[in-house]
Image 1 (cartoon, rainbow, N blue to C red):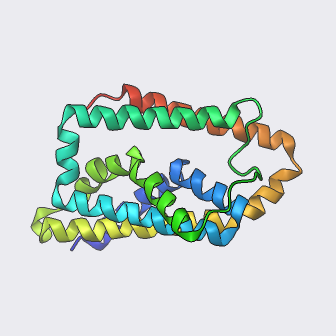
Image 2: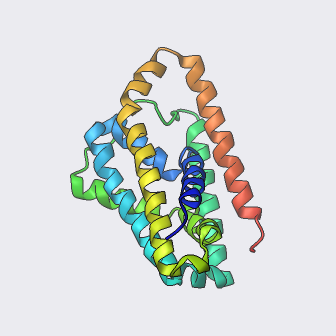
Image 3: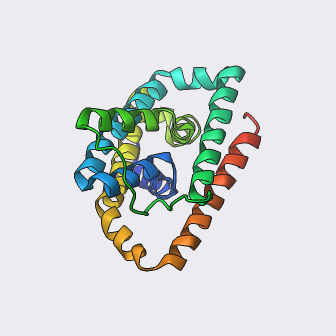
Length: 210
C-alpha cells in the first residue's frame, strides 16, 4: 500500500493531467451539449471502462511489453499525433466550432454512448503513456506487492479523472450558454484549443522513445 503522501502527490499529478484538454474531455463535452447532461455522464461509463483496461494491463505488465516493441510504440504514437492534429483542425477549420459550441449530433442510445466513450479512451495514447511512464514512478517495492500498489494508484487516477470529467460534463451546457453571447471569446477559445492540441500532436510525433 503506497504511503499517504505518495497517494496525494500522485492524485495531484493526475488532477493536472485530467484538466488538460484531450480526446476524452472533448467527446464528453460534445455529448453533454448535444444530447444532454445524462448522455455525457453515460458516456463517462465507457471512459471509465477504458481506464480499467489500461490499469489491468499496466498491473500485469502488458502495457510495458507493448511499449517495448518499437513498431507498436510508433504506431500508437503517430496514430495519437494524427488524432490530435485532426482535433486541432476541427477546432479552427472554416465552419468549425469550439468544444463548448452547441451543435446537433445523432441521438445515440446508452449502449452506443458507452461504447464510444470506451473506444475514445482506449485509443487515447495519453492514457497508455500515463500508466507506462507515470504510475511506476510512485511504486515502492519495499511497501508491498507491486501489483497491489499498481491497483491502488490506478484506482486513484480513475477516481480523479472521473470526478473532473463528470464535473465538466455536468457543467458543459451552462458553459455553452455563457459563451453563446460572447462570439469573440469563442474565437479565442477555438484558437487556444487548436494551439494546445496542435502542440501536443507535434510533441507526440517528435518525442523520442525512452
